[in-house]
Image 1 (cartoon, rainbow, N blue to C red):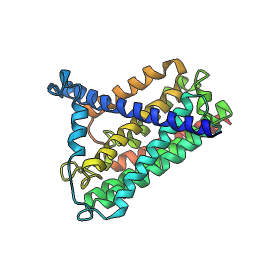
Image 2 (cartoon, rainbow, N blue to C red):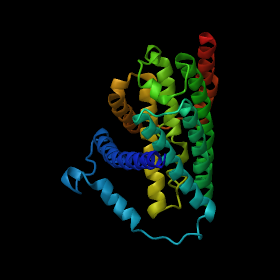
Image 3 (cartoon, one colour):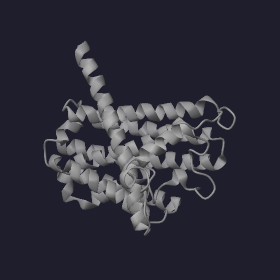
Image 4 (spheres, one colour):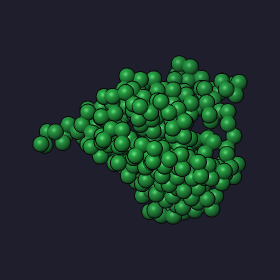
Length: 297
């Protein structure tokens, strides 16, 4: 029993480290692709063609120093960062269990619970920045996260009807029937764009002309944790999209395709007005999922 526990903790740490290394190269590839979209060169100085630019940025951020409790609202801002790190470990725990085919029968519901807690972290980080624009951005992001959770709950019910289970490992064994409904996948992509704070639904950072967003007053390790965990959630959402909507043999290809889609959307589309997005999600997306569930029953 003790040996199995130690082995699971070791697998969790290995998955977290590998995902974070992947995140570093994803940030580099995103900057490269955005550079070519905007007809300019991306990072190309550090290492071979800028290969180590992400690691150089990490070192630069870590060695910075700032006196806290002067512009931050004390412990709430710090605990919000810790909460996001813990949630990232929980995401990696689900991912490691899926890789080892040891997911529980309620792993998709656990994923829903972890996702619902992410909004509290963003809300606390925005409130702790002691800046009204950061607070506005975090409030919008939190309500957008609630919207995503409503759509995710509808999709979870559909998955339970098809598979008679919420086990993520079970989805790895069969061909998903959801590829027959491209509209469902399109609505899911719109939802994860909101959950991951990506353009055109990056409302947590929508005052970028005034402040940086919900993480305005953060620097060094705290900013690095917020930034890296945000990209880790992008990877997790891409992975969940792959196992819910496609066959297990296409997981890697679909994850890379989702990454390219997120980068391409950021480089091409403007930000959508917040009220238009909320109206679309609650009036059309959620109603479509409810009607889909009623058709199944």
